[in-house]
Amino acid sequence: MQAPNIPTDTYLDDKTYAALRAELAHLIALPLVHDPDTEIVRILGEVGGIWPRSVMDDAEAA
Image: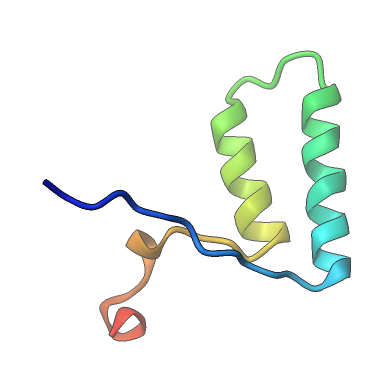
């Protein structure tokens, strides 16, 4: 049995954190985004620079 994956805290600079909050709040306020998951991924990546480890190049992951 595999141990549960416990997330570690990640601290962003205040400007990036505020931009993420603003974008996510805007997303929630929209009537219905055609693909909310894609928008969340875009916001996390493009605004916050937050990506899953699985998208890293092999050289970066080492």
